[in-house]
Length: 427
Image (cartoon, rainbow, N blue to C red):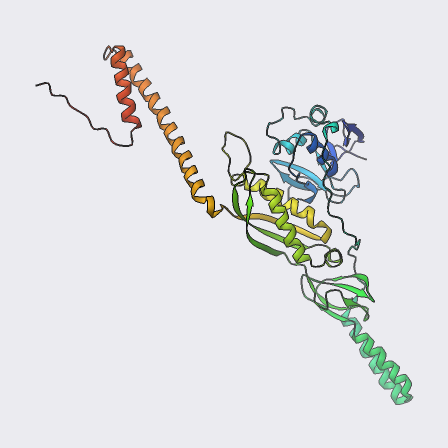
């Protein structure tokens, strides 16, 4: 197995119970997603990790690398400021030196100091800490996978059929035998039953006497086995990108506050055999799994969080939430042969029963922050005024006069109303 970066021989290492492929020269690592889950558990991460192998590939100018495990070309994916190489076939990811700790940075409340891949695993990862099992992907009894169905060009078969008709006519003129004529008509009728027409982005899953014999793809005029039937009752399977909108849902966030959340999921059928034979209705299946994934993700985050806390929130980290939501849905619907193109939150608000109270809370926080800024500025201005008076010898003030001056300046600077000077008349 060769390094994806420098093409040197890799070492198989067991670091605290985690199996990785390691390059001594560039210090890069190739890690399967199952091992990433182990690392996440040792770090105490409760959230479901995003699988880079399920993320959408990027178009970059950098040269693509080969997977050390299967030698297939890997794709580039972006996550949390890092571009890594992923192999969807092996469900593994190549991390250049320093990228592994950056991958886990989003999930950790306290940032790690060590960025070296080997040092990160050595110091922070110990599988003895693992106490909870890793949730496996959904398993379905059916093991069907798509493969191309046998087909011929329909126009070519039409020409052959016309030649057979011509031959039949000549045969009838020369040797009019009724039996031969009946057999020829049966053959022609049999051939006619095999014509299929497909539009762009359509497919047919074909079965013969109940057995799956392949999927017909590609727009045009086709001829297939006349005994084959569509598994979807003569209707085609759409391969177009489709949009799922399940409407708004009321879900409790991490703090228990009820919020309304709505998402849009863009998806497409990638494997027609899995979509038809692994689940009863793949459209209903993706709808249910999207709702389940949305609830799992929303419960892990608060609706909002202050910048000082350094914690991710539903309102402030939409890109991170969308990426995790897409990965969670993809993990659940992979068994149905569905590819998730994108998943984004389209509606996010507090539930009506607490919306007014939370709005008042937000307003109070905003007022406090504004007052804090005003007071800090006023104190600075008062300090500057006293220093100027003392430096320039404008006036010599006693402690009582300084206190009175500070009081007057703070009242003027912090008041919501304009100052109204009072002039004393000693006459």
